[in-house]
Length: 484
Image (cartoon, rainbow, N blue to C red; front, side, top):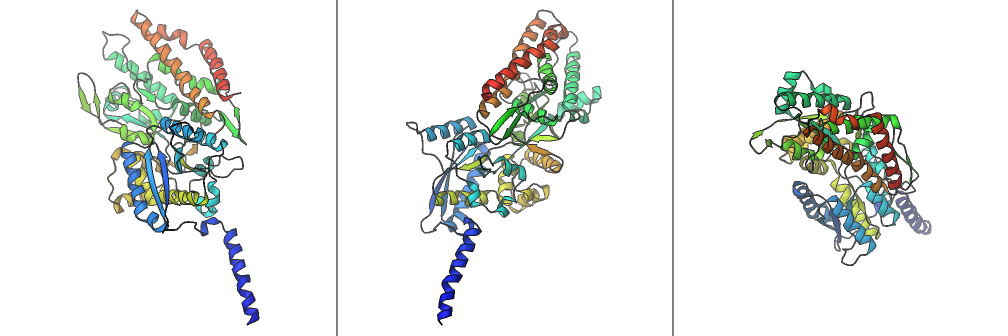
């Protein structure tokens, strides 16, 4: 009897040590009789917010109720509004709300908050078997801590696609001989856009120089980051938290030649807030934008004197000729504020539930976001969830998601790691060339109104000297913004 009584505490100690070594995920600090309340801030609006709120309600009524977690979600408006609210909360500004338990965040903002010591280490609440379920690059993006531990939980991602006004594309293609295959490269898009400008100009031979733009793109910063990556250059190379700039002249010339030049000549355009707005007004036929923008692609063209229904085509975003098939990886993840074990554990439990295959696909099928688990990125899984949950999915959103699923194996999704002054550096990519192109296009248009031809009016802006002047200015602005 004595030997048996001594064995019991030894066995208990062994079990306790084993539990400790297998991670805290095996021992919940939650008590259903004393539920923990969590606040989530995000930037979803409209149908995306409705989809997110519906899943939060489902969680609260099922798993949350069982485990003792109650989630309340609040939209902060836009991404910029959310970032401002988070910064104000961290700074303790008068009138600012307290930090939420969970909030949506892009890598640059998350990096700032991490540097302030305000983010929880999510690795402490996740087993390796948990992490293996997620797309590798999504997990890697979230490892922004100095020691490589996870700070951003991937919840919904997106990439870029090309969408085309099929109705107006078809007569143009039939009469000029251009094909959709021509749009697979950026150089091809530029050539097609020039052909479209000439074709539309020829429709009114009595009015010279009134050709129309064919193409535009949202997020010019993505054009730089992914375009350079396709050409073998990582413009922001981040290692151990330190960023090194790479701005080689030859590759940047190719980007300038296939964005600035066609913008100045009127082959490309940017008029409304987003390029889908420009398709709606008939000012563009095609654009590159986020998969989550598919729902905003118009059903008809609306102009002052007429309106008509249009169909659409979904294509992969163009890649530079001879370049590698890199595509942008974007979409905010969720981060957890540093607090106590109970709140941090509960936050991770909610995020794990939200990213379960069926739940994540339900959200993605409405919002246009890609699911984050490996097994969820398939048309078969998407169809299964739609059928089982009787979801109503917009055809444009469905076609965008399935187009990406079909190419997941050949694509390399990429996003640069976060770094100090990353937001400021990205703004240079977004606006420096785009603003210059808009200003110079206005000058070209004014010169044409005075009787110059397009070639005469645009000639001063598309020379090697013009590129060199922009290149120097661009590099200086980028170094200044990045603090280099």
